[in-house]
Length: 221
Image 1 (cartoon, rainbow, N blue to C red):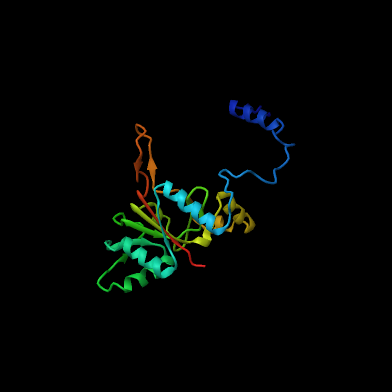
Image 2: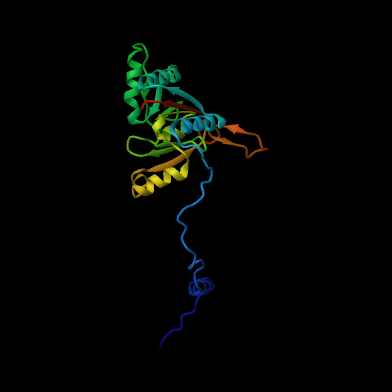
């Protein structure tokens, strides 16, 4: 004897939804989209100027240097009072070269999960001129906590990495089959220090992440 299958209310609703024609089936696909924050001038100097302006609006501190040597000197100046820092692998060589000139100074590369570390030093995948933001891709040798856990975040990048906006960066990723997304454990868009104004509309810096953001910008062609 066959049993009748009784559908639950949930199954009835889902069945009705699945039987309906899907919306927007005949809508043509767009070939291009308007950029969220348009950037008119896209030459190198204009992009650099716009990025610095927007980053400083967000309370980031930007330091322009001419080469890696000067970048190392500026980095040492920012961390000279620290005994240990969290640091990406690719930055360690620059850091070691800077410390060599100060034989009495010992700065340890700490475990990226060490909660007592006050400074995290990272590179960046790109800088976005339209919003003064940094694209940070973490992965092997690039701990995500370096840019998120310590109260002070220092990012080192080259002016060649400055792009007009997020849409421009995404277009580059699509042209490379989104390889950055498959190879990175985490991708963050960082716009200045962490902040919130949820309570009484009072702006608090460093509530959910670093309260200081320093950017060393190398103008090395």
